[in-house]
Image (tube, rainbow, N blue to C red):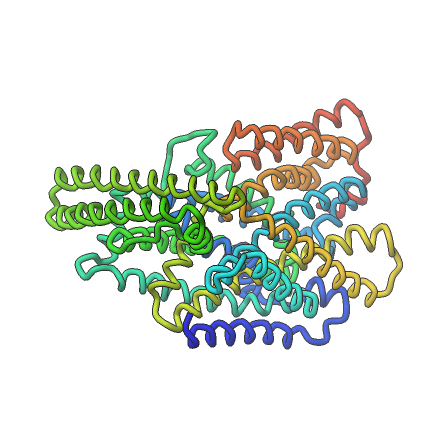
Length: 572
């Protein structure tokens, strides 16, 4: 990067962190540290919720996913608006009325401590693992820019976000996320404009999308039902609804965001706006990915986008074999470029027969290119069996650093950093609040002073930060980050959602029934998931329905009395 890019990056990051720390100064009480004194307006709630979900994974992996397999991932979010409506009707008013710090406090009031502890434990496991992934994503950037091992950049990124989260708590998180998302929207728009600008003069936006479509990259909607296909309308609307409802309704990293709202109305409005904005936002991020794909049809893409792994191979005993693979790749690109230009002409002439002929030829060259890359990844693994051979996460980053103008490179890289910092800070804050409120305050120090709980929250943040950094160091082996983090969540979210739905709507079901139902449901989900018998989005549906059904069955078998009347009153 140029000195201008480094300056833009440094000023943006330091300015955001400084602003968050300044706005959260004097944070000394539990209400202030964990809930921001419940003083946030709806637009801060909305942007904070979006920033928590839209981590660096979104801006690194989503364009790479669209580049390699198309836009079908957008269907993942089709259940989001409906989930937001259900949340606003049910979850938000109950959490606000009970004045809880975490979602799991409510479960002890409704059931008992072991049910609260089980759901809190499931959350801590899932969120602790996935937060490690969000730390790893921006570490990829520094590793690529500085050409050093990703281990060192992971340690740096983890330390940076731990610092300001420990210092300012949820206020620092919310205020920084407000600015982060504003900058992110501007930067993404600029990136999309620049991709189109860099295309050949004869290829405008419409033709770029058309070319990507002819090569199978604009498959945004799929109405074909399949239990094993993770991205179609049905899995998106049904499975996505259950996943989003559980994520926003029971994951403390999100519950903690909208509990900062100054009223039920402000929290509701923030969530509804998130539901309206998220799908177009994700569509545009994926659209940038397919525009980058079209750009690389006219400009030779790197043989392997992860330059660090490629440079290791260049310095190895296999460099001669690498040179042969590179030569084949270069020759293939020159041939494909000729056919792409013919496809361009066929589209301009609107000759459908010629368009179909060229489409077949271009796709054949595309498949040949994939075969060459497979040959390369085999060689990379031969040189270093621990090497990372999935470079989806480097596609957009490689394009940004290679082709965008000075200054804009620094801004876009700052965006990815900011996204990571925002989502990671929310996660660390939620892990700390759950640890302190649901474990430390409940079991260890029941009658402590307020400042003791704030200090415990800070130490918990540090502890979880270190755990997440360790997890991040093992993340390079898991492939596309945005898919993996959602697969990981799907193993747990359905079960937790089922517990909450039983708590809200099945008043006759008591603690023992729902506790054993949750354990059995989680076992079934893990079996289906590890055996890959259904696509991961359906795991959320299975987990949720299994808890509800087994709870009713166990309650009938146990024959317990109905829930106490004062708990009924609290949940009505």
